Length: 149
Image (tube, rainbow, N blue to C red; front, side, top):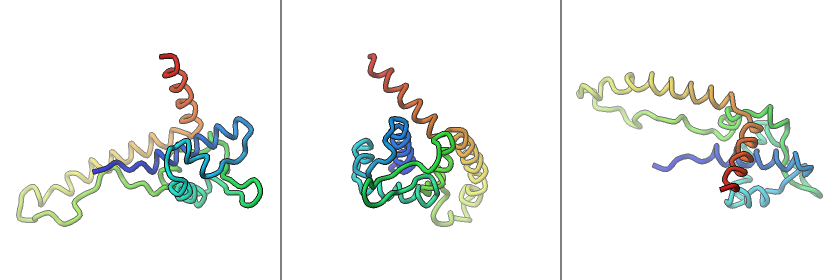
């Protein structure tokens, strides 16, 4: 089972837009963002479209076209990004009803539902406490640390 990277791609794109903004470049094209993420610009446009619908980025068309943050990176949380890209809960229950005649099958859903609910609650709390500015700060700090090795 592959991990869902939609949140990671969106956070990367937003941090890159925040850094560009800090450096005086108000907009970036999908191609510029895609070069940083090392993915296809179509993937980036889809992700940025989700973020635009959530009010986290804006798009400028025509001359000087590109994407920009719609608010300060300190005011964009990873929880907002997570919700914008429609990330799935970290764990899911069976797609089909387990065997009700089996002692485990009969009780597995209620047994795991509470645990999974608490995990998702903790995940959402952590994401809410982390901003795109925090992600950018940590990314730049990590870059400096790895450059010194």
